[in-house]
Length: 181
Length: 126
Image (cartoon, rainbow over all chains, first blue to last red):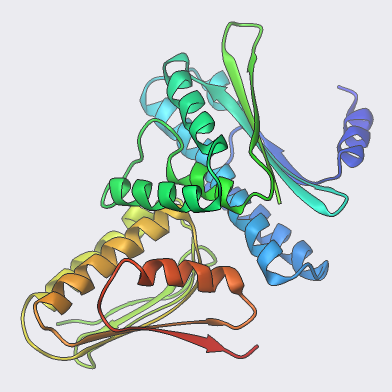
């Protein structure tokens, strides 16, 4: 592996922090804390800091929870380790990236959810959020889709969610999501 | 009824539920790996506490950030308080936030929209 080139690429992309593979909640928390410190030092203002932190937490917990559910459904470990999360600073914006292999059986619902969110304005997103909150109340595990977390990210984003579904060499699908703050 | 006290961690709030004092406080941030597990004993305690008696209850919240799964659990918590309020139990909720944290205020206002019990929002100067 050409580590130096990888480092250069990350620097060019403005990546402040990232991790890939299987990660514990402790790692997620640790990275969150250091990102928060960085944002505090950059004196961005509380709202922007809260938005970046919140989207980061939802994105990271979504990929982690999905991996946990897939583990319970008997997925192979290579797929579970496909997760990646990155926070990048691009000019005056922050981009929170997250990605993972999504099971073929979950793709239709994911697509439908993303398309539905893309058509909503601020008020529509708030209504969708409240509706989903009512639906998920009292339930330990959310449905197959990302649910409330995805709506929360869309609400915090300053631009529509950017996503892609990329076929992998072994016939699977890699979902990548970018949230702009 | 025995008090429920849990110290804060980076991803979970400080809990202080005191039946004798009629005071329940939550203080900090909440984004644990499993919010449902964290909040379950809190909800159980609340249910038990509100079941009988007519003692006034003060709920003081200083939660500045909640991830979406914690939001669900806090909504469940408010549902229990709201149900007791409808049974004429005197309950007040006061939720304070740091004045410069506009996102916290928005979150608190959205919770307030969901209930009818006396709910006060308190801005704390920075």
